[in-house]
Length: 201
Image (cartoon, rainbow, N blue to C red; front, side, top):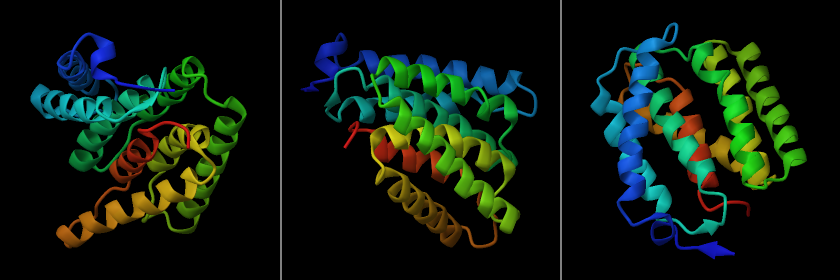
């Protein structure tokens, strides 16, 4: 059953304001973790608030909302770190696994599909990393497993759709900045967020 999110969560401004707080805390987290990123709080707070507002405007099954909210918050942190420093530290990618597991559990997601999605998405990206390390970093591989768990919960079809969308997002970024090597992590996170917003297919 689909629900009207803003009205069911205390008013239309609650989620964006919560996003401001979450983004501010995210910026503090990036400054605190090993090999994180020293970013201004506004660079995380404003994008998180905007993404949370967009997420809350898309109807989805009851209980699913925390999943895309977590993904959009993670997207901001990944983008802030990867675009600034060209890396994704373990202190950011590895805790994503238990965080994703918790929100999927409370969302009532299909956990067997999530586990398989995690293994498949991780395995495919690991194979690409082994084949062409310059095209896909180790941090992207570690991030892919957590994102694959969400995609598996959404649909089997969500896995190739998100992979293709992530490649397209990265390619557009490369075309806009042809002299720069654009990281793939932000594209992966963005594609997973977009694919999963409306819940299981």
